[in-house]
Image (tube, rainbow, N blue to C red; front, side):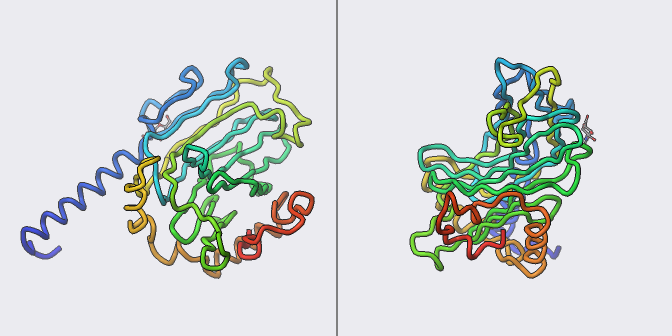
Length: 295
Ligand SMILES: *[C@@H]1O[C@H](CO)[C@@H](O)[C@H](O)[C@H]1NC(C)=O
């Protein structure tokens, strides 16, 4: 650092520091998240993580929601799935806005019997339209230790990662496909939940949740939440984010380089279980975005 450049420079630096500190302070903590089922939520004493404990058949869900919403962000957490029999139990980490034209990005982890593999189910909604399901087999046992799952979302690209490995991409194809909708106008909160997905989650709903195996404990900690804070329904705040650092954090996350493309191809070749792009019963013609996204 050089010498003081002038009073306006100081003000700018001070404001920058305040912004950085402010964002970090409120973003890295989940102590302010709203709890949907407090009796099934156990915060770490040091407030760096939380256990969602599904144990009440009458409630059959537990979850949390961030107080802040973001338009473009890099948001993730270390998550460890319930040990033992978790068939029928769905653990999630997702971002979503509200309203009829909502956006949503989902990580949904489909529980299973001991020794049976976990599937990761993902979906993307834009402007209220989803139907973009993919499922991959995880190449590790997510019950043994926590792994880092995160979204990198900017104005050009949305990527889902596991431990820095891309497992799904969704490009902004506005320039390639007329009328294409990319999530740009949504202010999205961060959510975590654990719930009874017996009707569909495990082996297409054939294997049900067994409450005798409860409690089902999913651990979420070391949250990394950083993005442009906006507010659902507040168009001006969302517009401001279009020119923020989060919208254009740099080529390394706005473009799909060779390495990440190769990694995605590998995930597709080895671990893909279901891809809406290949489902000709649902989509006699593949959605146009499928030609542009590796996975
Ligand atoms: C916070 O608590 C958790 C669980 O009790 C522990 O694993 C973690 O290391 C603690 N983190 C810090 C920063 O103290």
